[in-house]
Image 1 (tube, rainbow, N blue to C red):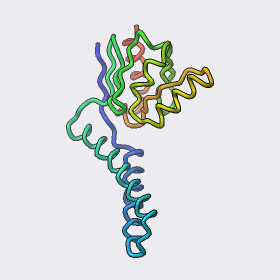
Image 2 (image 1 turned 120 degrees about the horizontal axis):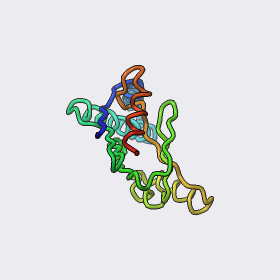
Image 3 (image 1 turned 45 degrees about the vertical axis):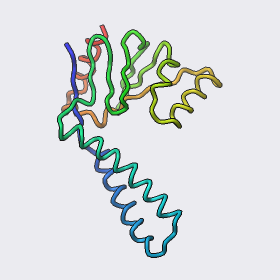
Length: 160
């Protein structure tokens, strides 16, 4: 049976919102002194944070699932990455995330959208011969209070 989870606008969302307000306020405050480096720094920071806020609000308003698991794959829509169960060696549940270890992680390095993270995963694999781990953030997934065990049990049933 497929498992769908929706986004939760929790601590992370409000932290992003507070950071965007502070960055915007400081950018407006320094506008009068016209320091282009500070304006660029805080402007880019506000844009990046605004992107995350818009992305999370998009999933919340349209009620689209941000996490899907079934017998074939796990789909993390926040990072837009699909992990096939046939490629997954192990899934480890931490307090705030799921760590996914893969048999052949080099196939998934090209799927990482952020070029810096892609480079770091490639360096870890090629230079240090360590398999990179992939993470799914559970803080943005709406799991009921006390429902974490039920969520992990449902995820385990999908993997079998």
